[in-house]
Image 1: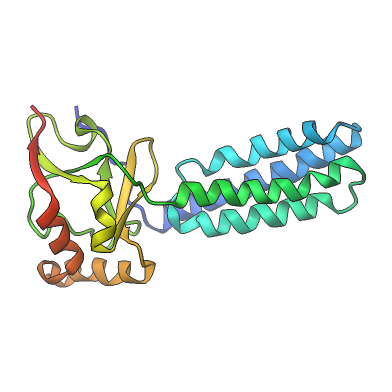
Image 2: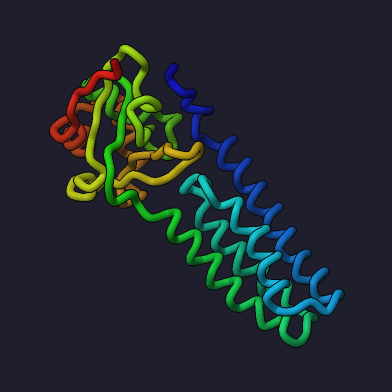
Length: 216
């Protein structure tokens, strides 16, 4: 059976993830202080705080990645205030690794196929106004296309030539296809709302490069 695509990626989801990120940041700072009071080694303090904070970034929507990155740096700096010796030295590496982890998660997918349920019409290959993270797709045919139905298959490697990228979002295997220039996303969403999606260069690119497949 076709897997659920989850809730619309609008403000509620973004706020939910932002709250999770802030909770992880607080846990990270707390971990530093606890380990410091127990005179733990730098590696123990670093491991505790890093593991606590970083795991929440997996699958976080692109729209909160910047918040997560900034929060990770602030948390590690704040945690080091008043913490002495080797524990304080762990704050710097924590900042760098948090930022690097977020950057890796926010990079577009470079290889593999992506599957979009439905036909090759301009309407189907254009995100709705509520699809604020982009056009929903999956990296397997069973999750991306209804059983017995048809969908569109496109190579992630070719998306950049059309000014698009596929970014990890939500459940494992789920990717949002959107313009590499974030400023173009609003115009793409508005095109479908205005009924002019067939004129969008992003939609036209997907139509030209997607292949219709069946999940039999």
